[in-house]
Length: 299
Image 1 (cartoon, rainbow, N blue to C red):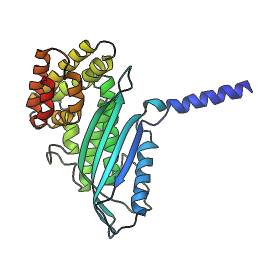
Image 2: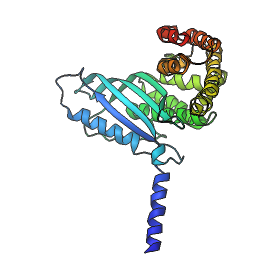
Image 3: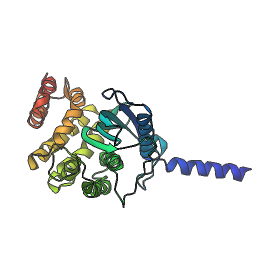
Image 4: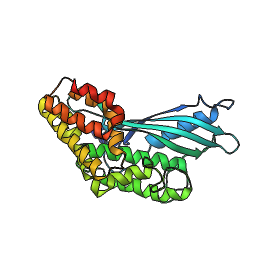
């Protein structure tokens, strides 16, 4: 009996150690589409949930509590029952916990406006990396790997490199599908541009920024807020260096878009005047469209 209990405990520990990487919440907004049956949308949501959450994307060992909290919010802009075609916008985002606190911080968030695919009510979603022939699964797999890679980069310097390489491979293979979002130089914010810029050697400061901002900065806020803020300031300088190295890249802009509230909370009323001014100047140069937020940093 004791041996049986030990075996059960071992199996439970093995299952916990081999949990899937993602804990994704999927939602579909079809308010813009009328006069259609709900079955296909319900099936689509269920299939995407299973596709993202029931698959192990890597050989890494994730415990259940370590699964990456992320969301895939899909807005259906157009749908045709004739050919089962969808034109959608996908808001994809992920968060990670901050050490020693109950706070979670966003590691990535962006609208993918090129989320177009075909899906019928009884279709099953499968992923075969060696045969990419479905744009829906290609897009979902790309973002699954991308979010895991971003999470790894925030815990270890350039820790997500192998998965970003997979993202590049998906882009190359999916380009042959004829769908939008995969072409080189087609759009400064498409999927190809995002991963290509991130892996560009000239953008190495951005990779280092990803680690320094979270591990040297946010994760140490509970121990010494002033030292942690100083580390964030140094990380922001790396963001500026990346912007200068590749001025057309949208990655620094995207980061400041989804980090604006957090950056304000870090600096508004905190730190030295020189520190706040330096950070303000950098953020304004990178993303002047958010200046109403950056102004709060100087106050």
